[in-house]
Image 1 (tube, rainbow, N blue to C red):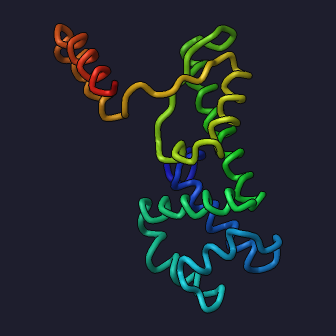
Image 2 (tube, rainbow, N blue to C red; image 1 turned 90 degrees about the vertical axis):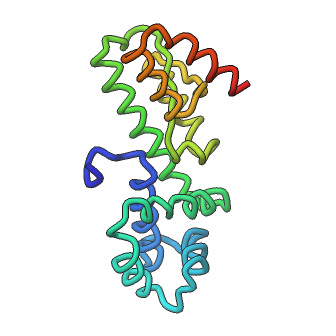
Length: 178
């Protein structure tokens, strides 16, 4: 559910972006790069206009809330420590997912590969080093994705519905990637 169990997604990061702006706007946290980025991005004349904008145009759309994540990225890269901390928390949350799946598969206690996909990983060095560290602490080793999620789905479909074509499909997709 987007309300719980979705930690580490761009939607989650977008919600955290709104929360951080709110805290900076009302003085619970010092104003930092995110505060200025949000004000400029949405041409806010006053901070309270953010509430109306989010409720009217963003909250009903998971995609729009997720679209706030690149603003968080910009703030973290501009030195906003609170924005960077959200990425560290995302890495921890994603590692909890790895732990849960690895535990269910009986991988914990051994060495196992872990790959990743999703928009949050476009933040690169803001999330990947912390994620890799957390995965390593579980016994996993982070592996760069070889294929896109769509290409992986194609291979899964080939393996499931046409096992004789699986190897050819895999080789074709890997060669296409170079």
